[in-house]
Image 1 (spheres, protein in one colour):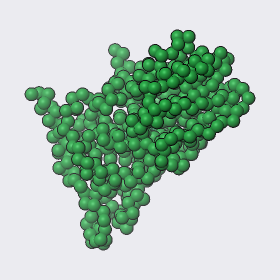
Image 2 (tube, protein in one colour; image 1 turned 90 degrees about the vertical axis):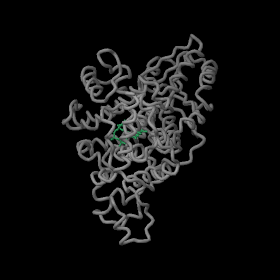
Image 3 (tube, protein in one colour; image 1 turned 90 degrees about the horizontal axis):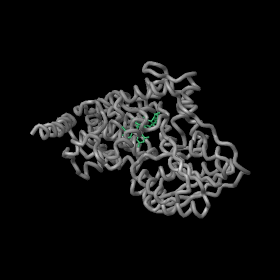
Image 4 (cartoon, helix red, strand yellow; image 1 turned 135 degrees about the horizontal axis):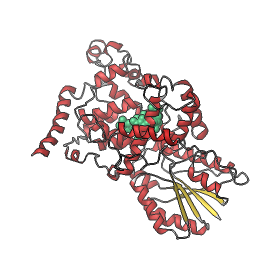
Length: 471
Ligand SMILES: Cc1cc2nc3c(=O)[nH]c(=O)nc-3n(C[C@H](O)[C@H](O)[C@H](O)COP(=O)(O)OP(=O)(O)OC[C@H]3O[C@@H](n4cnc5c(N)ncnc54)[C@H](O)[C@@H]3O)c2cc1C
């Protein structure tokens, strides 16, 4: 018997249900990864993430080789070609069972469905949840529907976790003599991800360090970008180098137990992991989210701005609002952005510049090392007022007061905007008057919009929807 494990966005050996179960089967186990470079491009994913993918694939191949499991790389342009390619490989290798962890995007699900239809009936296909603590579809309202807002979802999620616990799987047993992994090279990666150490060991080290040093202060410090107090584990979670169960286990190891309610130590970080699950469950329950459609269908009628010059100013960090510009330049330099800043820049693009959230979503995807559809789409639609959110549409972040609140001394701003390096804290969020007096030849742009007016325009855009409904 030959069982094949198909790795996708679960690039780890520990707590990997598909790999674990295959290794328990007593069959010969081998592994495969199918790279689809054209599909990657069509999904608009970032070169830095591709580089990180390659490095993590190599690390995975080495870990599998130690277990005596060879990892083969197959390449084909698009998902649509995968069923035929994989079916042929399975036939040639005389594979009797295929193991994989579920992927949630619509293209991935369509690919998997097409594969099922292509495969010989004798090949058993076993699919697992390796991506959420509690599998999608398991957290529902009494009538069996997916929740449309976060708070009741989180409540049910927590009570289910309390009732059932979570299942953390160990590394599988050694399957045979150690092998030598051959080097995997992917085409089309131009941005180095070296700032992020690759592989499961590095991810676990970062997780442990975070839990030991920052978990207890997370609730208090998580909103201040200059403090670097969040875990920065998102690149590992996005590619499945780390599993959410492993995050729960690390919380437990640090605190002796899991926090189940607000106010308990460590709860605020667990809450972010629940946000992650919420958006992933939503993606499955509402396939339109994978198709660039608004969660709230009526908001499809919003009259967005499609001005490329405005968009370019936002992308390049040249809006004249220091917190926005610092955040965008940090994104381009590092491929990562702090959550508070993601919320502020997304609000600015959609509510101050009135640009379609889909442009922002695509730009993030094309630049982020942790880009992943569920959280990115969820975050953008939350900010734009088109998403699964209980807050009223007239919530519009003020970029100046957000900066004053979360970067009061301007430390983060000065790190990314050298032209404002000399501006004292008192003026750092509204630097123009100071600049004109002290650095008259400065090249920092004036604010590209008047926030108060832009806010009223955003509210009017949403009011127009209501008028349409009642007409
Ligand atoms: C407009 C916008 C776009 C976003 N795009 C992405 C994206 O492409 N990929 C991505 O992983 N996250 C995205 N997020 C969510 C969040 O900003 C990042 O997960 C977080 O900043 C990563 O930093 P961290 O690992 O230090 O998080 P921590 O604060 O340490 O949180 C731990 C983990 O929980 C998850 N998480 C935290 N916050 C959220 C959230 N709001 N929604 C969903 N999951 C969350 C992440 O996996 C994160 O690594 C986006 C948020 C917004 C507002």
